[in-house]
Image: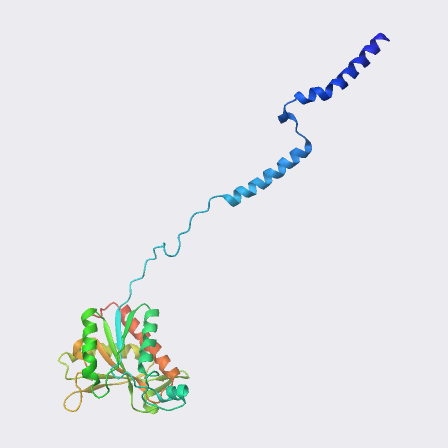
Length: 276
């Protein structure tokens, strides 16, 4: 009996002292199931954060990235001695009036279109815009062209005109598409006209490869009553072309401009040089 009493006394004593003793147990050892669950949740979340916060390689801005420019195929200058020459279908569509000369809808716009096509295809192209009196056009445009050529080297120079003949002579149908035909003028009073003739024939031949019949004859001019040089003596690769005639539509002209652009690009892509 005495032994049982001692056992119960010990149990009561331990139970009495337990709340006091637990205060001395280190905090790190007080791990509950709920805390374990919470810590596990934190671990999962932390891994996600690490994945998000991992350093991302810096990407240089467009301004900082060095983009290696492709070399241009060649340099072309385009100008118009008779800058107001226009096409009847275009002026009628714009103003409701038929005209063969126009201050805005004219061959200058054709030159700008050709410039854009050449640039798209890897050429360095420029236009020289100068309006001079029609009667003295070749003489008056000459100093501007000469100055431009003295400031920069060009591989090809094109003077674009519009012929005065009707659409029956300046239009061709190829695979159900209509194109404006191109004629070339060659000044025989130019001492070096043979070089200009060679370049003219090269461009003509390349165009014919694409659309047979798209070009007309090369028109030689010299002697009394004509200019005779057409400023082609300023550069051996200066070509004068007549883009269609008074009756060609904008669609026909645009198709031909694309052919001219392709032909020029092909000339510069060939192994043989287009030198002066």
